[in-house]
Image 1 (tube, rainbow, N blue to C red):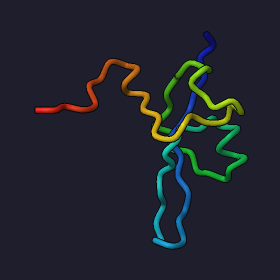
Image 2: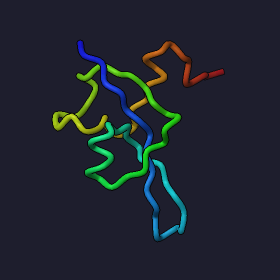
Image 3: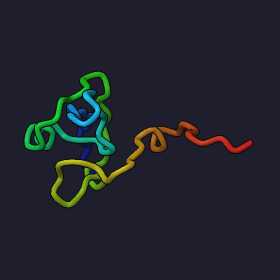
Length: 76
């Protein structure tokens, strides 16, 4: 499996007058096409098969931390 680097991205939301993070992780090429700002410190290497068929981003709500063994949800 090929590894690819994806990033968290954000875009300015005129309705709230703030930057908002995307719910997807994007490749550099995809972020450029979608006119998104890349958060350089958020780089994560994932398997290429985790991208959408277009190969530009992940599915909505993608969580790369679950792949690294971090527990992301604790139920008491």
